[in-house]
Image (cartoon, rainbow, N blue to C red):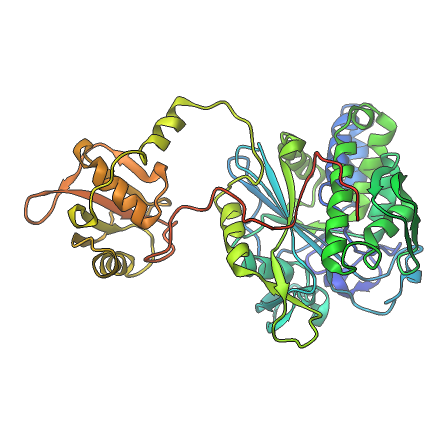
Length: 506
């Protein structure tokens, strides 16, 4: 693999752009946080006799690939975390040739962007359909000899072509996800077919529920209606089946996988697992063997630190959701889908703004209530709003385009733009005197400013010596007429599974 650090390597591996160790493995990745169990297991065994040697052993299990500059550079404890988890439809690995497609270099078959909030109270796992039409960007990719090669992008193709095809590596899938969602992942992880088998077995099986009998010869799944505990080959068959559930397509399979992952997460976080040393060691082995990760996190201690951060999450606030899509209108008989932008854009905006899709129960703080109250009360007429605009967004011409829009479209005629702010700022702010609160509320309403953008205090004087509010556009400014604040409620009708609830597949 380009940029990898594992020494025990043999044959090239096209789907992930590199090499793998002597015992071939395959990527399918029907999971999100299975590797967390491995990190937690390391915490238990590291303090034991021989812990250092075991640490080295687990470290040697990890395969890594360069992220080619497509990531943020690594997760941080003081901000939200975004991890891209993916798998391919290659069939390498013991016992997997029978599933077909043996000679393929593979595609991005399963892809989940995991967003964990800055305060670690909630998380969103966003599934991206493999058959969704998108543009794949140019992808600078590190070669085995250390040189860089740019793999040319392809417009208007299936998302699954972002991995494996034309020697694309996981960093190219990372760039494609950033292009789609506007979110730059901190890290990527690629899991394989055997991960589902070994990890489901390591936890003693995963409970699933079916609303009807299933007999799917293509995935080899045969289960009766009701609850079952699946592991090994049967667990793999469960997450692969698609023709026997829902509408029989990829979206139905995604929902089934989300239900499986929710159940797995409940099992991983249960006392029966965390207090069982044998299970934890098996998880440590299976988790590190199953993963290919970016080189910035290719160390068991770094994985442990990441696992500790994710361990702060309450399961009831983990939500699985799928990119909203519609049938491709360009096809007479649709076989692909395209993003449903009116629903997808607000969903992506919520994730970028670190808004939870769950009802996170917190104690209401006085400060938060006071901030929210700034938007409550009477609003002045737009014609009475007096404001000076400064550009602290880093975007050329932002103050002027905002001024033109406010005057020509919104009737805010008592406005002016005063050029660049002393320095760029991340968040847009509106400073105003107490007697201008009604003006501030009107401008906030017009521009879609969040309550936190309103800064009560004092105003400035304009060229005529009259008091004027001070609006400083920040990095969150997206354009004149585009609301600065993100939605706080998920769009209606999106496909969603909450991790703490048991759902029976239909």
